[in-house]
Length: 304
Image (cartoon, rainbow, N blue to C red; front, side):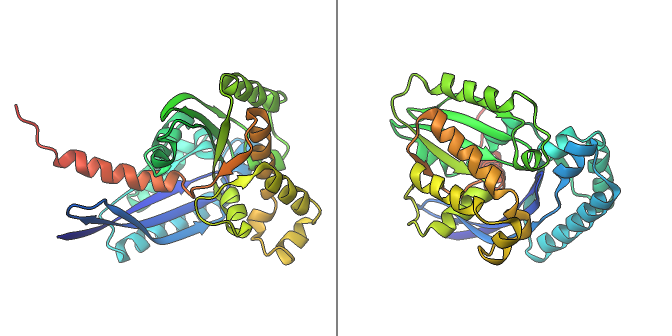
């Protein structure tokens, strides 16, 4: 018996808006398969509006609204059974964030859930991250976004500590960080990991996925601190324009790749990690898994 349903996740971040459509394949007696059917990424940099002006501009609202209309049409064409849209740092901090969400709902009937850093970490934890952390090893999970970075420490398969910092790539390139943010992150990582002799990183986010894809590493094999440091120095030696023309990066990747790599390298240094694993998971994957888990929970019969 084979059952296939499609679920969709919309991730409204500070650097881009993404639609992920996944086919969920249920097989009797076998593990459920999650296959990515379609991924659409629109580089609407909401963070530049919010972190500089405090609100989402009319121009970017219009772009966002048109994107959501397009996403709704794509979900209809794919016959998506259920979807969820989650917005993170930029929408959360925008003075008109809730107003924007209400306008989009009235125009498209698509509800946007504005979530905090803890919610984001919890959603991502439902992904294949579980299979990686179910061991005696210690991992520092680092999810770098445009507006914030989420850190979660796992030891012996359990969450030890978690923290979200307003340290994001869009904030860095616009030079709008809090004065002590790097020191605060360093202090938290060192304090959280000091009791563990061997820590490895798990990296999440579009930038580390881009680095991993271009590294030629086999899936499952980690990147070393040495490799990431060399990559950072290489990219830094190119201008923004050369990263686009010579390194074949998208324009909205070419400027944020350096600050993102710096965050990962700093986290590795402060936690004394020699390797970083890149399982290519993120908020969208977590939303898909959450929707499926809710479906399973709804099927459970409770005897009274």
